[in-house]
Image (cartoon, rainbow, N blue to C red; front, side):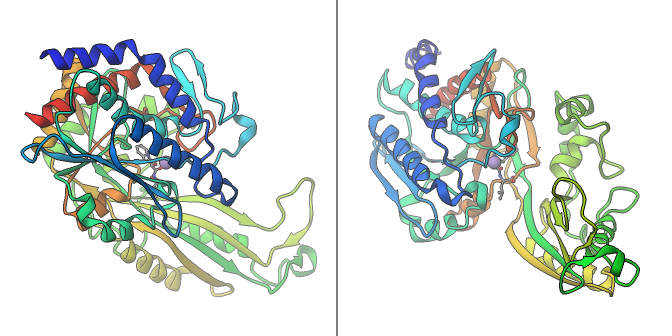
Length: 458
Ligand code: BES
Ligand code: MN
């Protein structure tokens, strides 16, 4: 290890508590993007990050307002033109905390228990974001940064990043870079580091089913009209066949099959069915026949019901035949499926299969295609070497089941590839109560980013 590297790594090891204190500060801010009452906290989180960038000596730090939540920019371009410029991406917004009763410690009072820190947003993705900045701090203690940096941190990832692509369009010059780095793509296990080369896309929609024009007495009308809740359930039940395949017409036509070497790589995964059984707490696993769980999670599309609403759900009982029912439905997409095509397929499906006794309405919501990146790029090689230096073993290459819409925007608008990685674990309770971050892995992540930045300069 060259001297500056080992000094930076040593600094990181000696400053774990200081980095943890920063994470606690940021995680204490309830920056819930979907929640209108969080608007001031969103602003506070953006300011916290802008201040962190400034205190690191980053330049041109600015909070850009958008029609939604602000975007924080900063840069440091003094490494010279012959060194690469990397664009670090992050999102400072978090998911809502409900059901709040299930949290062991309050969601915005970060608490360390054993090897974990618990708080909303620590793993998705405030902690991941700070890895990239803490590594910069460590390097700066030993000398100048080896590469040029730009930073773009948004506050709307958890609600679909809808103001992000217009921002990229308007600031192409400012954001011009060689590669983007996204540490929001998740890891796999504390023992084996991981690089994500594909993320699934998303087509989200709301399906409403209308029956009678008002709620009816279920005795007075049950037997006379079709219950919209029943109709909705029949529709939903028909969306998968006995093999767990999705029945939308043409749904699989655009699905790119896994290449043989990808199958081999996915089979090398350190986790499998037993892990997902335990992590989910479900009585059994379920999915499309003919594929392993890991393949289904990353490389195959799925359809989920995120929630349903109809009729009386309060305490006690009420005999009622509801006037309407609705479900929030999403499909996770893989290359080369397009969200707009999926909405059309859903439309065709409903035209053919929805019961004639009801009216339905399909409302398309957030849509983003999947992304897949080059596993052989020199940037990936630089990260791979960095991870290997810390873990003493090469990373596995993962297709992630979740989505990070901006990766597609970086490619389409800025024309750059994104390196996706992260140090979260599948059982970190992302989007659930008791979200947590595995601290030993997090600290290793900081070391890895120190190496990564130096490797990028070579
Ligand atoms: N960090 C997640 C994506 C993710 C999930 C990475 C699991 C690794 C493992 C991200 O913040 C997220 O939740 N994305 C949303 C995007 C959606 C709102 C457009 C998702 O995947 O549901
Ligand atoms: Mn998330």
